[in-house]
Length: 62
Image 1: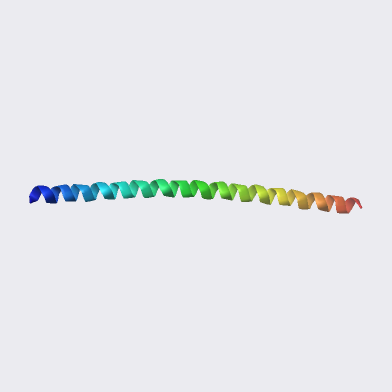
Image 2 (image 1 turned 60 degrees about the vertical axis):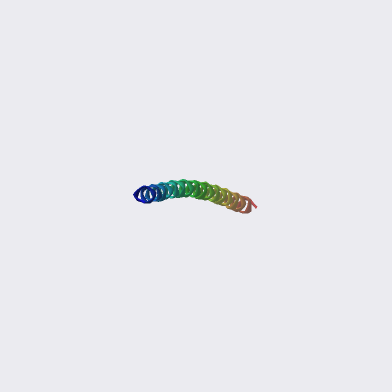
């Protein structure tokens, strides 16, 4: 009976480690995805700022 309990305990510990490692991996992927989306939004924001500046310059020329 002690051997069965030990095997069960070791199995639970291994499953817990697998869960923790996999959750860390998915968190890193999510963070990387969020960073890329943030950079994309920043670039789009800069593009819009440049377009506004360009339109203001054209307006002032007229």
